[in-house]
Length: 175
Image (cartoon, rainbow, N blue to C red; front, side, top):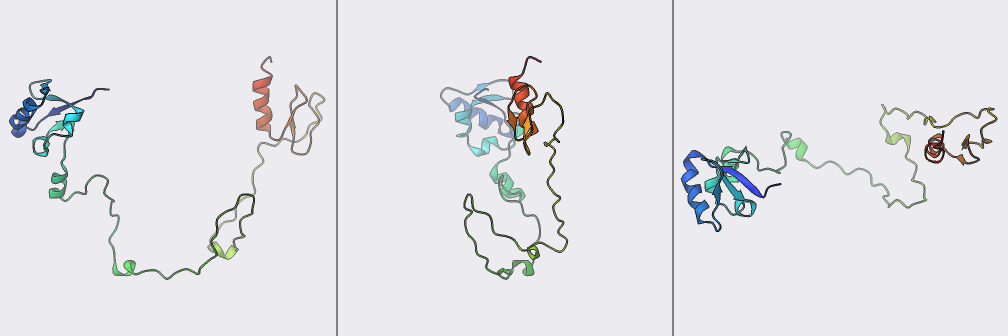
């Protein structure tokens, strides 16, 4: 990454930019008939009026003064998304105060009444058990406990099929 910024001043500001460039120590060098290579530390000190309208690393330089004159918001300013109406500016009534408390690890969350959900709320489907396999009568497999998955190459058991498969790939690489 280069620490030089290539600036091509606007035609009307080229002489003023050149005067500023030769006053710097060390002098700012040219990289073409119309462009200068300015160290990054000097770029931030350059006067605003010589930069307006120039190309900085191939992008048009837009000053904050130019943004204000054109009525554009400054970069990073919040974007207004709608029109405020008097009805929207009045404060909404306070909802019924509910007991708020911090969550405590190991303590169950309070039950939420079904009335808290809208009339069009859809109940959640039951959880999928994709990683569970039914027990088989294969004599090469380890005996299955409820919800346990045994490795067919050693006596270890795992709580999920994914854990068993990961074990097989890492521990039994010979086959």
